Image 1 (cartoon, rainbow, N blue to C red):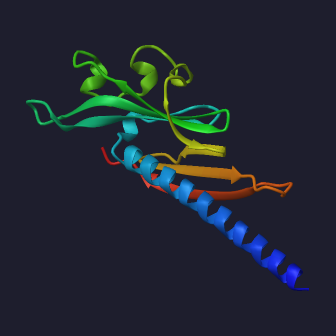
Image 2: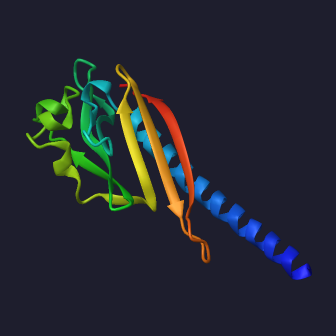
Length: 169
């Protein structure tokens, strides 16, 4: 009987730890993603048809020209690939029209958003869903779901978070 009580308590503790780890991972990724997207321009927002990649132009720090207009220094791209979420920065040259106008990444070098799904920096593992949808105007909805397997359990623990973001530039 004591062994059963110990076993049940131990199992509950492991499940709580796994859920806490997943929640922390998802919240950290959402925080970083929201910080990047909120700095972006809604005019340059690109969402993949599969809704698992997003790109937005962001201004340089103190990036104003002589007319006090924003200069966009790079695109930030997030994409899901093989259960991992990646972040990539694509620099915008000063002579490119995308530097002074918030253009979608497809208008930057004639490539599609799908062409930028490489050379990214790993942001998170165990991501089973990354869904981005543009709600029109300046609003973007993001759903992120992560999973983690525990030893001895046939089904993984999952945690999902959906948030709405507003692009500001």
